[in-house]
Amino acid sequence: MKKIFIALVFYLLSSSVLVANESDCSGIKKLSKEYLTCKAKNIKDGANKVNNKIKVGSANKTEQIKEGTKNIFNKIKNKIKKN
Image (cartoon, rainbow, N blue to C red):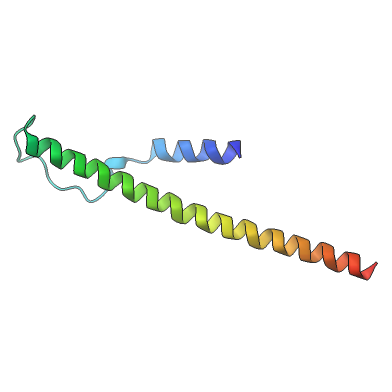
């Protein structure tokens, strides 16, 4: 569990939140309400994109673990039935 948590933290820190579909805020006057709104929207969109990637990745990993444990238990059950 600690390894998964550490990997998740490392992934979040290494991924750039602002890489998402950014709207261009360079034409707006800095320290204006519109500029701050634009930047906040870019950050929010980037964070949502990263969260969705994490959700999909963790769902896939959970499914793989579930299938793996089913296979292991089926093998054990078959060995018990043979003996």
